[in-house]
Image (cartoon, rainbow, N blue to C red; front, top):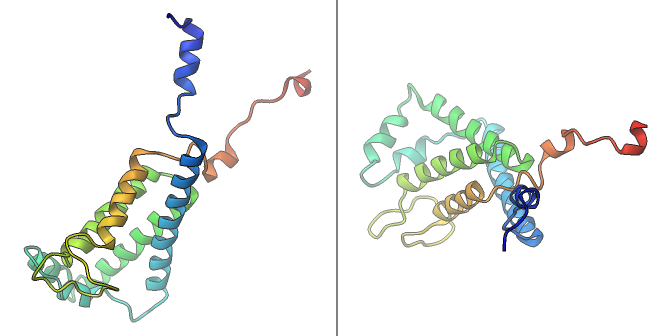
Length: 175
């Protein structure tokens, strides 16, 4: 059965494979992850004694030399600042629903660095952790959730940008 051209264009424009319930859950996931990133950034920013140096120096695995280099006294303050900035920006972007793809990708990158410093692999010290992990830890899970947010965008459904979009003027007002 052929679909009239106008209706076919309208179907493509309004095509959304996700239900409202699915979008609500994805928005909630986006806000929760955003809150986690923002909170971690704020806590580190307001704690003058916080530094990533101990975490970097205790790194294990094939990337240990890289993380040891990042912990040098000459650059650790920059590394700390970059870490905090990424946490804050990713958190704000996810909560507000702006630049979600870029924020998600940045968050995945940061979480993978955390994972590579302390991989949840047999024989490795897992570093500071709330529990015991084997291959998959909370950093890897949160990175996977950010990948979901990258490929199932929700900012068209719920974001701060929607507050500032131009709405068409109703016909009764134009006359």
